[in-house]
Image 1 (cartoon, rainbow, N blue to C red):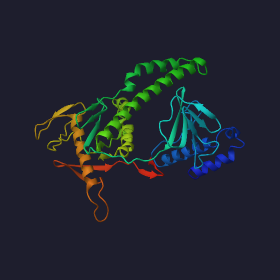
Image 2 (image 1 turned 180 degrees about the horizontal axis):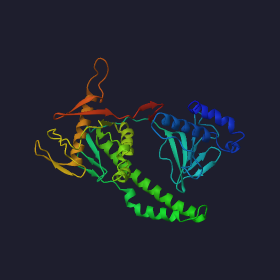
Image 3 (image 1 turned 90 degrees about the vertical axis):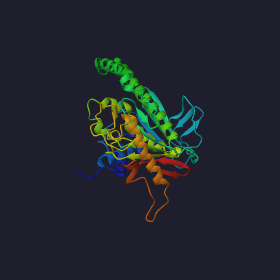
Image 4 (image 1 turned 60 degrees about the horizontal axis):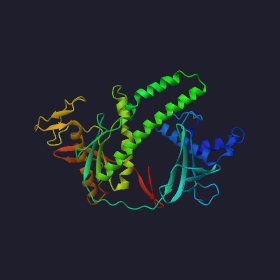
Length: 371
């Protein structure tokens, strides 16, 4: 079996091979293979940690072609990444025109050039001065993700998802069938591949745009947001719901909430995975165990209140967020500070385990790093 591949071992192996086996690597910036090895090392760490599958071999034109250039500490290096209006200077390549100018003023740390379908993009990491966020509204809110509507908020508002995959499914199938009929290696097959890739890219762009708009509005609206710890991987095993769940982007929704919350002086409280938010009456705390996925409304046997399934879940998650805010405002006790972890009373006799979001926030040379 041998030792597990690490970034350092992979870097040494590549340095020993590239002079004879890959001489073309000397024609490009050294950052390209260095950053690729760094990403491969991280991918192996995720694999051995049980968080991802085994990394697969990448082939030019068959994968998401990309490379990353790092400016390092020497911003005056002749090969440093630089932006001038609608131009960007890339190492070895030189100046390349862009469709839009950089919207942030600061020191450029890195640039990632990537291909999506038949278009090329550059993503720039910029170090900017940190301005501490100020929040006047201290309201807590709950968010329930669903298949019918992308998100239902505790204030009664509903965010309808674009259902990008479902909307374009017929065209996607038609282009896939057209591609399968083209001869391999032909020019017509390459054209069909490009058309299919453009549609996939559009579906992804529509979904990401909706997620960014929704998550930004939520963290601006609430000082604390209560969400569920959804088992997305398990939910995708349901053959009848897998496509609809994937079309929502539940994992990406939570990821965006967690990294955007500190930027807007907000916080995310994650309820315990087994907390019955939909089945629990937010008025009296009674649990309706007979609730099924097809039941959109139900009446509480304890108090007679009529509940919309999703709105009731959002109200229960708001109680989790309120508990998180209350715990954060308590003074420090002997032995440590009070956090949102552990068993928290959510009001009205309810008890819901809540844990803080896993987002790590560090202030490093005036730049916030979220990991």
